[in-house]
Structures are given as structure tokens and as C-alpha cells.
Image 1 (spheres, rainbow, N blue to C red):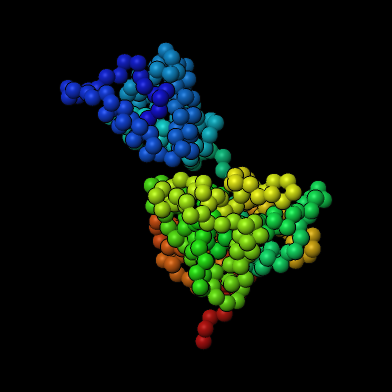
Image 2 (image 1 turned 90 degrees about the vertical axis):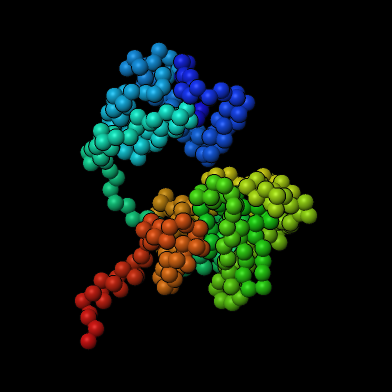
Amino acid sequence: MFEEAAPADWRPLSSVPVHHELMRRAQQLQTVARAPATRTSYRHWWQVFGEFCTQVRWATEAVAVPLPVHADVVVMWVAWLSARYAESTIAISLAAISAVHAGYGLPSPTGGARIRGMLSGVARTGKVRGVSEPVVVLPVHLKAFVALTAVVSSEGTRWSRLRVLRAKAMVVLGFMAYLRKSEVDGLDRCDVTREADCTKVRVCRAKNDPVGRGRVTVVGAACGDSRAMEQTLWDWVDAADLRESRSCSKATDPRARCLACGPLFPRIGGHGKVSRSPIGKGTLTAELRGLYAQCQRVGTLPTSIDLTKLSAISLRRGGNSAAVAAGVSSLIRAAHGRWRAVETPDQSYTFVHQAEMVSLATSMLQPRL
């Protein structure tokens, strides 16, 4: 429920006496039940819908839309959006309208066969993007990154040693722990712990964990390439002198950033000074592309890789796909990647490597005797 959503003539339908302080608290709880990004999106679409309501004369002011909205208004709204947006975007706008009605205990006008039929029609008739082969990070790519001793930007600027170490650590951890971009950005120093045979990564602000209970993922191993990958994280931690504080606050509130320990991947200022501010939203993708570009320049990775198709999600997809190639079950991968459904990593995050696809195409015509 949003501040702008309150209709001018809305009144409680019940005859039960209303305690205004409790009602305000109830509204606050409904508001924080959604993630900040969701609230921002819903607020935007409710404002646009309010302006539309004035155009079709359902409301005299965009900030005072009478509730409940008539179903015919919503039907016209979907028809108006259909010439401008895809089905998924229209569905978000309908979710915003439904959320406002739910906040006032009113039935939503966004359901019903008419709306569902219109959404199906938009999906069938709207423009669709062509099939695009995603780029995922492979284990061979990761090894090439770790082997780099220096990185030079496209403008000819040489990265500092700390920046190279941070980039390696971010990319390796994103791949090995199947981390989303927001999860990499949100890690604090106290979220990683080194054990005798592995490193434990505590993810407290996962996309599908709005309550912030947190989950622990294990990366690294005691031997081989996995141990070398794990070491990149601790090389960065040691070089940046990142330490856990005795005043760590994660035990009392794991959802909040730990100001005592600081971010695991902070910004790097001039003269190699490490700040106390976390990296920006686009830093992980930019550093990943920078590592790829350097590997292409030195010849350790092919130039055929399109860097514009690379993003932070390439790490999460790549780590899961590499585990598939190694024969790891979907149950283990779902637990490792903190997915709620066991089917999700197979349906949305598994991309068979070209070598495996060629092997499949060959073996199809070679039946066992």
C-alpha cells in the first residue's frame, strides 16, 4: 500500500471501532512486507495508472483514485499498455493495482477471465526478441582470470594491484557460490569464514529470502584447482587488510550491513586506499568484462566471446552449468545456489557447453552394442 494510493472517499466497511494507531502500524507492516525495489516499481505504476484514470474520467485527480476500481477501467488499461509494453511488464502494473486494493481490504479488479485472456493475447501478438545464446563463465575462463598478473583497461590505464585482486575474488566467489549480483554487493567481511578444508559464505540478503534468515554456502576445497580458487578470496582480504571486528553486529541483525566489519568488497580510492563504502551496482559486471578483455589481449581466451553479453548473472549460470557437467545432482545444486525449488537450476540456469552438445550430437548416432 502506498501513500499516494489512498482514495479520498475510502472508509472502513466494518462497524468495528478503528484504533488509528494500530491501523497506521498495520499499514507500515503491509508496506515493509515487500522489498524496496518492489515498492518503488509498484509506486511508479500506481502513479501512471492514476494519470490514466483521469484520462478515462474514472478519477478527477491522479492522486485520488476511487476504490475499488471498476473492472472495465482495468480492461482499458491493459488495452492501452498492450501497444507499448510486453506481457511481463503489464503483469507488474496489474500487481501494483492489486496490491493497493489488498492494502485496503478490497477485492482486486485485476483477476478474471477477461484480463487473463488479454494477457495471453499480448503474449501471442507482441514483439519477441530472437533467440540469443547467453555467455556463461566456464572453469577454463576462471583459471585464465586467476593466472593474470596485470590488467590494463581499454583506455590504457593499468589497474592497481588491489583492484586486480578484488576483481579476481569477486568473480571467483560469484562463480563458486552461485551468487547473484546483489548478493556479491551485499557481502560483509564477517560473512566469510575460513575453515580447515573450505570457506563458508553466509548470504543474508538473498533475493528469495526477504526475511533475511540467511543461508551458508561452502566454497573451496583442500586441494587442486578449487583450493587455488578459494585462495584468491583470502589474497584479497589480506592485501586489503580486511578484518572482523569485535563489535560485529551480524549476530543481532543479519539483514543490516555490518558497519563494524565493513563490506567484503569495498570501493578502492586513489593511491590504493580501501574505503568503507561497498562497490557500486555495476562494478561486478565491469570488472568481469575487464578480466575477459585482458585475457583476450594476452591470448589466453578467444576473441570470439562477445563482452557485451557478459554480466554478473553469467557467473551464477556458469557455476551451476559447470556442476551439471561434473554430474552434481539438482538437489545439491539447488541447496548450494539457495533456490527454493529443486527444478529451478535445471530449468533456468543450466547451459550445456558447446563441447558437450557436440558430444551429444555425435553419440546419438552411435548406439551402444
